[in-house]
Each structure stands twice: as C-alpha cells, then as structure tokens.
Image 1 (tube, rainbow, N blue to C red):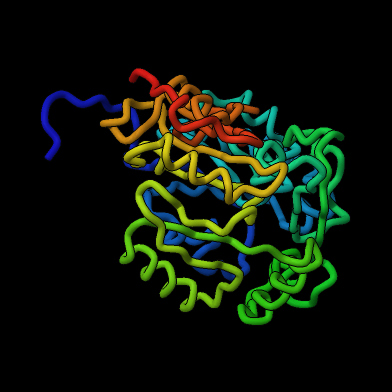
Image 2 (cartoon, rainbow, N blue to C red):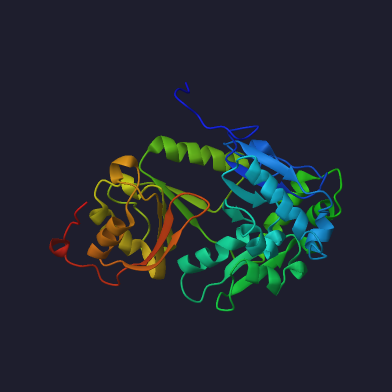
Length: 333
C-alpha cells in the first residue's frame, strides 16, 4: 500500500526499461524483446517510424539517428529508468543516443563484448552471432568499444533460409522450429562446443533447472549438487567460473575459493557479479571482495560497474599455488 507524499510529473508510471523498436510486423515470440511476456518487469515500447529492418541492418540505418534520438527522449519523458533497443546494429548510434538523454542507454548486446573479453583466457576469441555478418562493420564495433585488441569470431545467419529472410524482409510468418535449427547450426560454426557446469547447493534448484533444460531442449549442461563450502567441480575443467549474485551467500568464502582453485584450468578467469551492499543486505562491498580473494591468492584483473543494470563485475585470475590454510588471514567487514 502506498502512503505519504508522492511526486508526479508523468502520465504513466511503473516502467523500468524503455525499448526503442524498429518499424516491423514480423512475429515476435516470447524471448524476443518485442514480446512483453519476455520480461518479468514492466517495459515501455516506442516504435520508431520508418526504421525498416533492412534499412537498419543492410543499409546502415541511413538518416535514422534523429528519429531514434527523438524516441529516446520520449521514453525518458515518460519516466523510464533506462533505454535499450531491439536491434544490435543500432550500436553505431550508442554515443549520440547516450548523450541525448539523462538515463542510461544500452543500444546493443555488443556492448558486452569488452566485458566478456576480460573474462576469457588470453588467446580466446569472443563469438558473435548476428543476423547478417556482412553488415557488421567497424563503425558498429567502434560504437560498442570493441578495439582491435579483442579477437572476434563472427558468424552470420544470412547463410540460412528462414530467420534472416523473415526478419529483414519483415514477413508475417516465421517457422519457429526451422529458425531454431538455423540458430543451432550457425552457433556450431563458432566452435566445437563447450560444457557448462551449473552447480547449486539446493537439490530442488538443481531439479528445477534440469526440468527446464529438458523442456527447452538445451544440451551441453552438466548439473552438479554442490556443498556450501565446495562447488564440487571436476579438476582442471573450468575456463571461466561465474559467481552471479551468490558470493555474498557463501558461508566461508575462504574455504570455497580454496576448493574452487583445483577445478580451474590453466589461464582460467573467475568473474564475480554482485551488488555493492553490505553482506546482510545481499551484496558484497568491492573492497571486501578484493580482500577476501587476495587472501587466498586470487588477483583482480578488472572491475566494471554494470550500468544500466545494478551491481558490478569483478574479474580475477586464480593463484597457481594455494597458500597454506594457516596463512589465510580473514578480512574485516
């Protein structure tokens, strides 16, 4: 129940994210940004008239920047807290659009590439799958902050028959099963595949994830029932370990990190995603995180605030040799 004095100024309220939409009519199933059922929070849509998908992707979105800036300002005026788009090729407008409003703007998932590069071992490439590889230019990479020092592997859907034709042709009917098969086929061109280990200490969560993987036909995931102080991962098997919004829940972080190290492959990285809050409030202050990992020999490589999302990502390299348990000194909170 709302009480007290509240501030007005908008016509509608409760929208967390505003989404700038291309001017399309092709079907959008759950999982697509253009389907509101995709999100577990309210979103506000703004169609940009004239932003035909072929114009945006194959013809460089020529002449569309003013319309997208206008759309971003309209979303801001309606009270959204952050703005994104439903087409990654708009990343070429990232700087101009971010400079046109006062709320964070996230035009494309390509903005995550520098972050992913920080997490993977040296010498590995970041894979990008796109609707049309030939249309992905240096201008797009520059907009995303992807420098020449970041090795890429790019695969495009233009070699397939269904997905690219329907999207860029703005057609009315999509064969979902055919499009799904095309995505899997193109993704395999990026590499021979990998194994994902998903570990949790609660059997009910592991069972729930197993049921979802089966329901959605997702393979390549090995489920592990871990222990509060031991993830129970296979020896030397993990290239990238991601601890997402769970580090603050670890009962004894020093023992957990100690037991994690033998499972990490040479050159592995450890990424911690958490909130900058005291531990009792379900977060980990960055200084405490650095101290605790350093106590076990982990060295911080990078730190990134996850704007417009909440929290941060800290990337670490594990020690080659673990310190004696008696030498580990707990950090003060």
